Image (cartoon, rainbow, N blue to C red; front, side, top):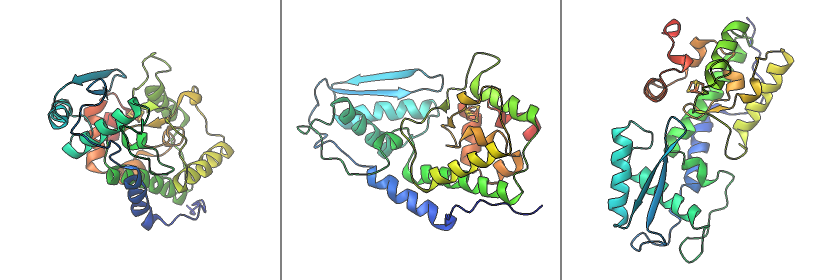
Length: 256
Ligand code: SF4
């Protein structure tokens, strides 16, 4: 089949580096100091797979508080289970909670990638790799002539993400907390337009958002053959799907 790769002007080879740099630009430690207790002490809200959150509160030293959060992440196989990631997350959370009060927080670095993005619990390189893999999957799909899976299969995948037929949507199917900008946003937009021209749609499509595990746009991904999806996924991401949401359609036996 002829390649139909959309000409989005992206240099895939540089994408990971570019993203890693941009993520690092906003991956800052905004508190002026972590040696003083901020107003109200240390607080942190750890998002959980079922959509709820585990609240932490402590009047102890910063490092000790972060160790508590880290131990919880490790014990529950949550993303971001490294000391540095937890410290960054607690730090960012605190400044957001304090409204970036200049008495406690440093001036923010101007960036199109808000700290919230990093605060979702993954390091910069991992996040950059996820977006890059998603783009490469879309390019591979174009190379295969945008051949979609069948309507029934796409609908079934979508229903798992949205919970249309069960009322239980996947907690990782989430609206972005901010608009994605830059080259990846352009690639996604171009491919969504292509999908629409091909008249590919499922019931409940408005409730299909981005997958928080792989960062892919699910309006597109439900149409992509599993071989192309898995070809670009790292073992870590495949494992995340298994451990974080075993009901995910990517874990289905037919796709093993
Ligand atoms: S792909 Fe899987 S983990 Fe991601 S939103 Fe859909 S069901 Fe959830």
